[in-house]
Image (tube, rainbow, N blue to C red; front, side):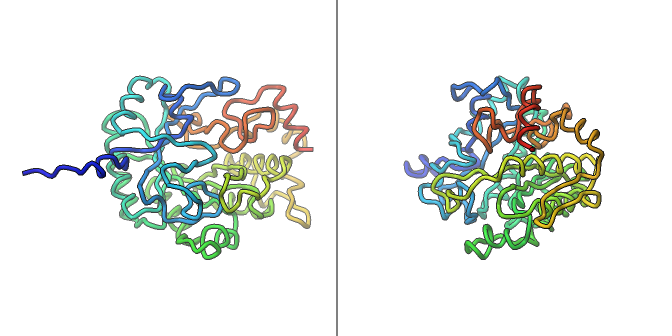
Length: 351
């Protein structure tokens, strides 16, 4: 005798059979039509766990928040749709375009079933390809033993989306302020555990500029991650429609550019916060290098490229084209190497 799913159960598109995939990844695999602005390329297939009940977190800025109206499977994330595909479809799509894929990233959500499902999906993907797999984890529902299981399943890098630069802002937008489940200390503990297990350089944190922090506070957070052995994946706040923060402004471009330079200097051990200078409002006024040396750093364009997990070739694979700004001259994170005209515009923006 065997169990047969009811028609209602069969229509549920949930993991591990079904996942949501970023629109950029769906375009990369040929699942969705479209062209990238300036012929940008994505080399990481980003997938997202999906459940009918959604994510239990209530983060004020997130498109997947339970505070945001609408069905979870219809909610946008990072301002774009995340269409659903079966895991079999995704594996076939990657097989057909392996030359374009240098990494796969599985994003968890705060759901009690996510730990087991993430482990199973990671095993399946690693058994199908010799392509590295990152996990963007949910510390609130994890134990250290779960991290060990993730490593055994084949994951090689871990991302911890702390997002906010200070404990006060974290509580306001992710914790008590929105009646959410997340704890500041837990996120930092999970980052420390990930670095201990996966090794220096193989775990890091996401931070989002423009949430009310000073530039100094953001630099302090990024330096803390670096001192632990990790790195920072930096983003600019971009409001998600109909979220509780839909009217919150983006940070001024000059501010974001300064923080991008600071991140690049810190993560590459070119300078550190002990050498930076700040004004009374916490604004960066010196980076601890000569003007000529800073000019050279800016001329490379590297500080302004998307910071993300690398692929098997050592280059950033998870470059999320236009995830935190619209395509156009005011790109905030470049998914490709900035050209001479871009550098000229960046310099003007920094003024």
